Image 1: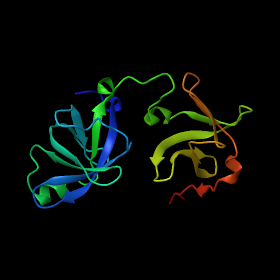
Image 2: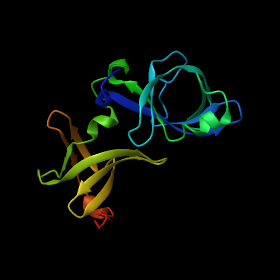
Image 3: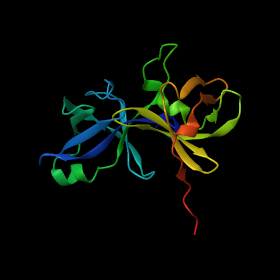
Image 4: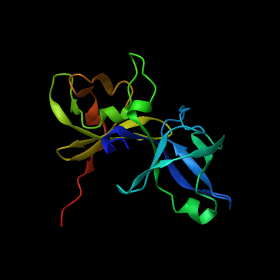
Length: 181
């Protein structure tokens, strides 16, 4: 089994479809063609639960960015519903090679976020895929902000420098940090 840090999520199981164990699956990348019958994938239970290999038996289109999937060992609605919130993952080594101008969004997590003058404003906590845009959730001194991954906000991604360069962040709403009891 690959190390947990080498298993990357591709989709999330959102629930059951019908009574025969078919799963509703939301793709994290709507254009992904990686979840096909016979692909080597892993099921990661919610909240850091167990990770186990998964055999995909069938896949069909459902709605935009969603598919219906049948997997080995899931033959009724209750079994399918029990997997809700689980992630479908693939080992990094099994992912396709990227072209020079492409990145995996997961590689942005942990990068320092800077202004063009070099001032550090925070760290990328996670990426979020909204219907209208992909954003970086960034931990800043006063809480969290969500920075869209397009102009005028995104200036550059410098993977070798482990930095994301942004601007116009003063226009974005800050979500206050939760109070600690």
